Amino acid sequence: MINTLNPLIFTKSKKNRQGFKLPEVEFQDIELNEFIPDNFLRKKNPNLPELTEFQVVRHYTNLSVKNHHVDKDFYPLGSCTMKYNPKINDYIAGLPGFSLLHPNQPLESVQGALKLYYELERMLIEITGFKAVSLQPSAGSQGEMVGLLLMKAYHRKKKNKDKSIIIIPETAHGTNPASVIMSGYQVRQVKSDNRGRVDIEHLNELVDDSVAGMMLTQPNTLGLFEDHIEKITSIIHSVDGLMYMDGANLNALVGIVKPDDMGFDIMHINLHKTFSTPHGGGGPGSGPVGVNEKLVDFLPFPTVEYDKKNKNYFLHYNKDSIGRIHSFFGNFGILVRAYVYILSLGNKGLKEVSTNAVLNANYLKYLLKDHYDVPFSDGTLHEFVISAVKQKKKGYKALVIAKKILDYGFHSPTVYFPINVEESIMIEPTETESRETIEKFADTLIQINKSIDMDDESLLEAPLNTPVRKLNETKANRELNVRWKDEVQS
Ligand SMILES: Cc1ncc(COP(=O)(O)O)c(C=O)c1O
Image 1 (cartoon, rainbow, N blue to C red):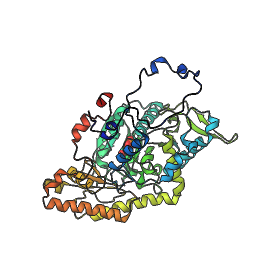
Image 2 (cartoon, protein in one colour):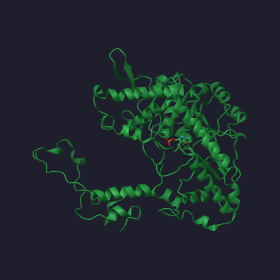
Image 3 (cartoon, protein in one colour):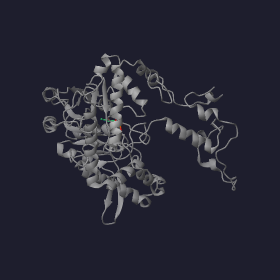
Image 4 (cartoon, rainbow, N blue to C red):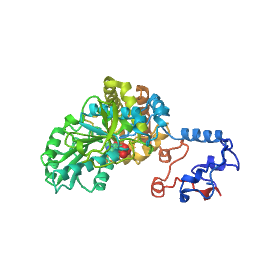
């Protein structure tokens, strides 16, 4: 039977084809299995496809161009900061001194790696203004979870017994309420005002002594700066609640605003957005958490410290810590990339990242404003949300537009998020794109809008030019099956 998901590699398999040949083992008396428990030993060979090396290389090369990625073309996926990442960062992360380290090596033999770890923490402290940072969390969402556990530890220590509620805005990313529930708190949702920011009046109504804290994305998921931030933090602090900043949108602020100065107590940073690893695709990530002095003692252990006298780095286990939340040192390769990125840009370069990200988003919004509704437009930073309500009335909803964009060789923006904008299309061009790309993308959306005005029904069939046509997304979500099984080959 042919595996329709992955036809090339399995149908090309031929018995006894080999990609490599190792020399015969010379020392037959070495019993390799001696150290491996019997129940971990394979009883028979796995049924893997048999191919030559170049068939495998061609297979993956072909797959890589079938898929869309940042190295191929524009990827304006709102909330994901899919910017181009300099290849030098990958190269340095791949140097044997980093990539071949074993996490169980004695500390004396990994002093260079620990130095990088320690210095990256200091760089992020400088960028955020916080007192300390933990590099352990391996995603933004894991950072959220850690932040909420830190809140718990804080309230436990202060004997704030009745704290059970976390306030989050209706524009919040889905991971926020999920993290709240997973950490044993309950969600209370605050409405947005008519400017797309937190409704202060409603917030005042919601806050009481049961509030443990608030999670807020800054700038929010409409790409707007929460300009009442000082009022918001003082409301939450008045009941000894803690302010958590979802820092996934730091690309709009880096080098310009320090979250600590805005009154936040905790934040996560998505290194795999702002600091050089692409987000998305489920690849490895890193979501460091920064805190102010109220929470330093609770950060995950071990922390990496520097002994000035003996000039060496060592591990410290704080007794009030919430414990380890990731094996070893987090996703170390991502940390190396972030370190190189920050060092190579410096203060001036980081500031240019955010100013150019804001400039590009505002320029693209300007090009589109006469063709699509832009419901909350006042104060756009690094991304913005348009609405396809007008187009939907003509029979072409946001999803149809998103699918048609694929035919022009671009990735689509995020659709149907945030949920307080009907038929939302959330666009984040990032700072790395050229003026030509932004104008070409604007022309694409304008062209699609013209086709809608002409009632071009072929739009409903889109995409027409992609390697696979329109997929049944509901079925794919409910019955996801991406794993090849032996039987498929027989
Ligand atoms: C606003 C916001 N918060 C949190 C997250 C979660 O980050 P991660 O995907 O690294 O878990 C995302 C991810 O896209 C996000 O956009």
